Length: 103
Image (cartoon, rainbow, N blue to C red; front, side, top):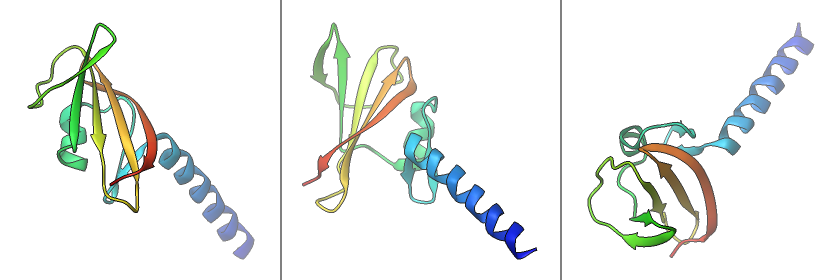
């Protein structure tokens, strides 16, 4: 029975690490690609900044409309954590990238 318990724990940890590597941990929840902007806001709060992408060029934008274009949200959580770049397309989270340590 003990061997089965250890095996089950290993499977759960492996599955969690796969989810965590594909998503972004905000508090006690994980945000995964495919999430809507409103889901990300509810789980992670307001981003440090937002950039709207138009024609391949970035332009700073205030407010958080659910527009249909591509947008990058930046979460800079300080000098002890990596900066997170969340890319949205048509209101859905397309991908998450990590930069250097924040400031």
